[in-house]
Image (cartoon, rainbow, N blue to C red; front, side, top):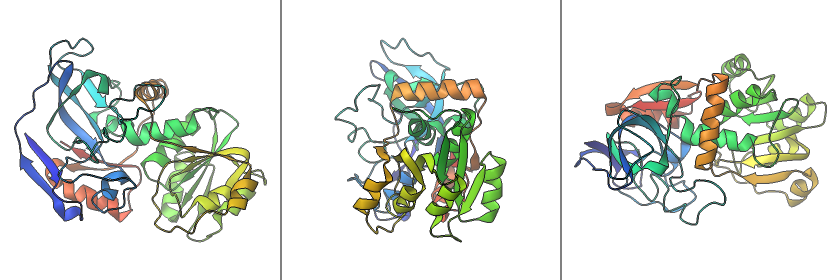
Length: 336
């Protein structure tokens, strides 16, 4: 089979296409012919040295994929040849408390990911995809889709009448917009582009704030809610945006902390954090049961993932470059 690996972690030029032996499924495993993978910011952060945890060189990158089962190992009862599946982002987090092995299982960081033609994997680490989604669409769900769903659910699920703030127009934010609208919530979105702002409105955003024109956009978001603030912030920016998110969130609301897209780190004002009256919940994508719940929601609502562009397998490097450009809206997919 063909597989890409980052030989070193000193930039995108280290991405190399290799010819490798085909894997064979062991007991309890299925062999998946990968049909599509989707990129996340973490896939760019690792070779750029911006990932917040240690990473190993020489691994196959990318955590999100869809494909079809082409062979089953001994003892496999959950799947048969021909089944269409996606891999769970955390292959051994099935539900309940996060397992202590979660970092060791991290695709692209400490274990081989999915940017390859074939992958042998435990039957417990994949789930079926609905007939309503193509391989390309399904490949966007394991990380971005589930992260957005986890951010909107949790101890206090978002429901009709609530308000949600999404930052930017990347994969998680677009999914959060779509899913929040699906449950009847009002969505406010931020962007630095008026053209993207119009697209966000077309997707259902009630209000759009241009953060490039107003660096104090948190106050503007609060004003748009009549001074109350939003019930949930889907916080993908990290250190560079948290201060404004604290200004935007309602008393008793929640900031769902997800990403680290921003590079600035001015620090957090403790008194602003304390005075916000909001809770702060760290999101680490989600477990297998959450992924299955998301798939049921997607099936019931007819939600269609927003794909910015699909690249060919041989153009994988160009897909990484496109992600780095920041011009995309929604997900970037590589067809294998």
